[in-house]
Structure formats: structure tokens, C-alpha cells
Amino acid sequence: MSAPPRIDPARIAHAAHAIAPVFRDTPTWHSPAIDAACGALVSCKLELLTPIRSFKGRGADWFVASLDPGDTRPLACASAGNFGQGLAWAARARGRALTVYAATTANTLKIERMRALGATVVQHGDDLDAAKTEAKRVAAARGWHFVEDGLAPAISEGAGTIAVELLATVMALDVIVAPVGNGALVAGIGAWCAAHAPYVRVIGVCAAGAPAMAESWRRHRAGVPLAEAIVSHPRVDTIADGIAIREPIAEAVADMRDVVHDVVTVSDEAIRDAMRVVWRAGGVVVEASGAAGLAALLDAAHPWRGLRVATVLCGGNCTDAQVAEVQLQG
Image (cartoon, rainbow, N blue to C red; front, side):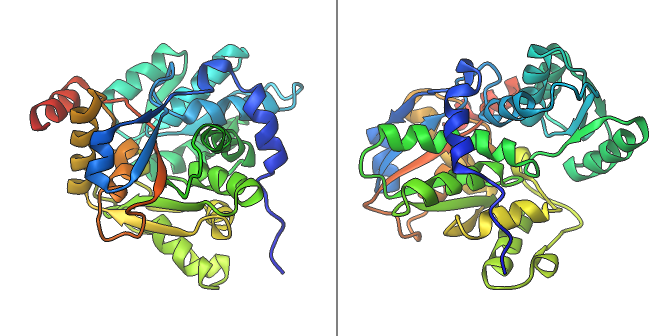
């Protein structure tokens, strides 16, 4: 017998009104140029227009707000940068101490912004998963509350508020396509749609150079027991640092299994093309991981051409060099 769902649509509905207003009701942008490039009617949820330039503030704020007020332990997490910013914002707003572990290769702009928001940032290891292992070790030794993006249901519930807003503003929506890192975004969207709009297909997108979540989801969806379904890789190779996962969280894969209809992969070149399309269409700079959903929509091989689709441009934390590259190539 399957375990009961961890992500509660009723709590998503509550979060839609309770999370900090600065993270809610982001614009939904429609561009004829993007429609033409994708061969579909595309609505882009601009989650990069928040104080931290990503959607991560939703889940982080709802998570911290849901903590027991009597639990005053310092918080710790591992992040490529966007979740760390969201948790830093929420922790600072409530007077909580936070230490973020990030890879030595992490985006320098994201590191600077996490520190500016009051987090202590420790860089360790070559990638996010190595940083996470060290963060867990230190948190256990020091009695900190370790917060794992994709594990705590409240983080997915906060992210699921994006679906609440999309379904309220986009009529006759057929498909929602969203990037997949640790899985909180697509699992939250999927949980809301399964409960309130089961006719909407929810598609996750991984980078081809970091396919572990896609492979694990496919195996579990096909009936492989969760413990045996998880696929890990020794390394990742993608420009999309925010979704560069090599060791999936089993609970997140389980959250996705019944509410996500497919998980596809896209190449780094397809992601770069999507970043260029967004820049040419509206002068909007989106980071690589934030453009993965649009990269999938640009692929004519997938079955959403001619449909009304939405995607989440879920991050825009690019360094000056990354911005210049997109502008020059665009």
C-alpha cells in the first residue's frame, strides 16, 4: 500500500495567503515571440521578480513560519544559492540564525546575496551534494536544525502556491512545465493540480547533464520500489547549477510519482537557446536552471505544440559575466 501524500493541498491553499506578500502574485507574462518559437500559447510565470530573484522564497517562508515557536535552534541548509537566499530572507525576518553550505564552485553572486541577507556561508566540496553532506554532519554535531530543500513538505507546499496563481489567471490551461532540482517546485505544483485541476498535465524538466531525478522518477513511476528506484551519479555536468542534482531525495521522488505526468531532460545548448529567446522577447535575463522549462517547450518533439501551456521562469540570479553572455549571444 502506498504511503499517504505528504504534500497537503489544504496547506497550499493556506500558504497562498500566508506567505510573505513580496513572494506572491508574481506577474504572468505572455509574449507572441515566445509563442511563435514554441508553437504553443505560452504563459511565463516571472518568479525572478522577487527580492531574491527566484521562487524559493515561497517555500522557505512557509517552512520557517510553520516551525514550532519554541524551537529556537539555529538553522542550516545546503544550497546552490537560491534556496539559501530564500531561507536567509525568512530566517532574518523571524530572528533565526542560519548557516548555508555551498559548493566551492557556486555562483559568486548568489554567495554574496546570501551573506547580504544575514546568512553565514561556508563553501565546501565541488558540488551541491558534497556541500549537503558536510552541512548535515556539522548540523548534527552542533545541534542545528538542518533544512533540506525537497524534503520538508512545507517547502513544496509553498512552491505549490505558484499553481494556485497560474490556475486563477490563465484560462483553459493544458500543461504546466517546471524545472526539477530537488523536486519541491514540480511536486507542489503537481499536488495542487491533482486536487483542483486534474486535467492539467504537469511536466518536470531536468538538465541532461544531471538526470538523476528524471531517472529515479521514471523507475519509481514504473513500479520499482522507492528504495530501489533511486539513481545517483558520481558527478554532474551542466550549466544549470540550481538543478544539478546527483543524489535525489527519496521522499521527493515519491512526492512526484503520482502527481507529475512526465519528466524530460534538456541539453545545455537548449537551455542557452531558451535564455536567448527570453532575452530577445522581453529583455529578461533568466538563469540557466530557471530557463529549463522553456527549453523543453522549444523542443518540437514534445506533445504540447498547439496547446495552452505555462512555465515557471524560476530564477534570475546571473553574474555580470553571465548576463553579458546572454546579451551578446541574443
